[in-house]
Length: 405
Ligand code: PLP
Picture (cartoon, rainbow, N blue to C red):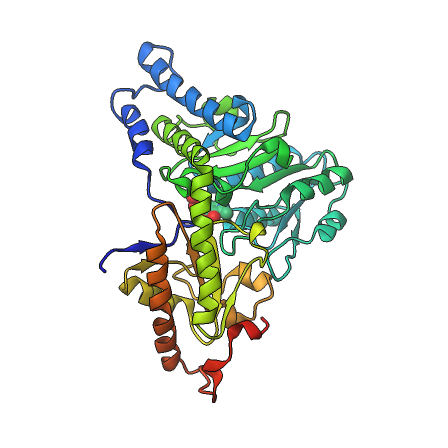
């Protein structure tokens, strides 16, 4: 009964002990600087090269196309700023979309302040980008398009391969970046099948350590380094590489794909139970994100509850041993409704009542059933305290499924 139930795997994941084990030698005996030439350095270099090869193998790219960074945020910033500035002689137009993570959106807004022209594509009610708008937006002066592979708040899997085809048909010189942070271990990340030129990942989202990420950059893509100093990462990202963490990220990614089928089958069964059961157990509840489950991340279930604040649900769940999120981790704690839900057209009051439950490899069906048991009473208690809760005759009896968003 006192066991904690962690349902916030889109925010971060617990490091896999096998990952920690792979890292440990590089935090003790193998401490050399991988850029030096003596024996100590060579051991570190071997670890770093091995990690790069392993990640490249999983992305189906060349090892030299993988740049190690300090986190996915840095990868996104390097992609946007690096390509926009390196391509400025050809154009100053960048296209992205309204539901990107702030790592992309805030980098895009800064580019706008610095004189670039930005287009933010709209999304529909399920979070999908509008491909016709994308086609209209791309012009001769477009140098970069950045569309996420999957959304961290509502699990929408964007049609990236199709978007790449549309962009390249209109302007073959425009580079295409995807933030694939939520897709590692849940989606196929073959960069040629996707057709992308740049792709960001961050290790702590797939049972690796925090403080390390990578950016795939297709050969010959223009990129201006943003971190200046040494010649590391072939002059594309200065700073002594974090060897142990790069090794950990590679091990975590290898495990995610070795165990892909089993992990995703479990995620899907847990997610589907949440999506099937919550709206019928809690009145006035809406599922957010794609209705077609094959187009939503296997581990992601997201909801909005009417007449209630998401933050209040999180606190009540926490007291009962459940860790969850309202919108993205970065916006929880603030009362601003999520930019993702508002871009999807949800009314502000509804967007404020959002709950995201993202499952992981250590979750069980018993844990999901416990959450399904406790949520209805949490919601009805909070609603009874809410000034906006209309005590309408028979309101509870009406199924939320009958009410359109
Ligand atoms: N992109 C997406 C889609 C994310 O979900 C996150 C983290 O939530 C990030 C980027 C940024 O990751 P980090 O904070 O680890 O740099």
